[in-house]
Amino acid sequence: MTINSGTFFFVICITIASSLRDDHYEKIRSGAPAVIEDAQHFQIQQVFGLTTCAVLCLHMSCQEFQYSDTSRLCITRHTDPVPGGAISPGIGLFDTYYKQEPRSCAEIRKQNPAAHSGEYNIMPSAPQFRGIPVKVFCLMDDTHQLEYVTLPNENIGNFPKRSNSNCRKEHPYLVRGGVGRDGVTVYQKIRVIPSTMTVVRTDTTFTSGNKTKPHGYGKAEDCYSYEKYCKRIGTFRINTMGTGMKFATTLNWTGKGVASKVHSVTRTHDGAVVDLVCGGWCAGCVPMEDMVLYPNSKDTQQ
Figure 1 (cartoon, one colour):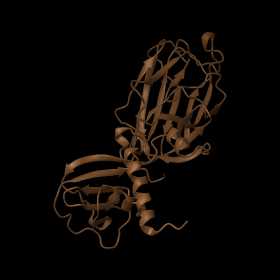
Figure 2 (cartoon, rainbow, N blue to C red):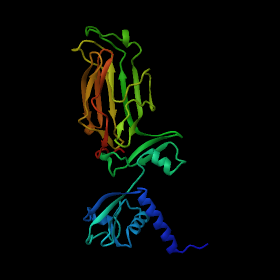
Figure 3 (cartoon, rainbow, N blue to C red):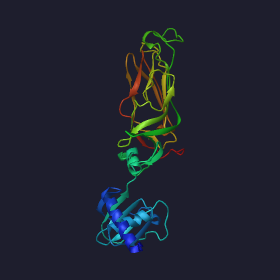
């Protein structure tokens, strides 16, 4: 059977109409003047209707299109400059649609049931990442699909095997309840929730080290001394360089446990690297709120 170009175009239109209903394109603005911030990346064309505009966007691999039902003008936005870029958007009010990329590993598996565990790009639904792709490692199996951020640099917690109970003499061992609690935890990946980009601090799936009970992510602890005036020596280094993300510089830590104390919180690399020194009498410090990731525009290593 031979299918002519007109029939093929009609089939494509029906497919795109379904895609619009299935939220493959998300309407992000309604009835507003055309938005053209970088004219050489836009093209304006007269079209038959909304579906035709969506088809053009699909075939031109654009990320966003604007359509006016009154003037039937279609404005497609492209990542790279295009020939004959927009000069004037004409008249009329436009609805704006954004091409919806997979928002989670579950959506990737739904679109491709054969998808295996590995690195993928998603567009998290977290408000701070609107329109910003994020690379995640998808841990895929038949029951769940989980998102992890791979950490190119060392993220490590150290619970030292040293004690100085009354802060008079340091010993190269731990006493009483501290025995066996020392050790190191290294995180290769951290689990995140795409809807908020909050870190699941208790997920130690991708860790290594010799601590019997691994550090929760972002927790520094020791069993050094019960004296409040004594120093603390438990450490944790957070380093999100190379991921394109970081934690808010307003994120802070608080002591948790007997004689717990935050000794210091040091931030470098515009807050992408955080060095914690905390501890207590088998205690330490934890974040005061959820550890939420934000885009880091100054990260050039990603």
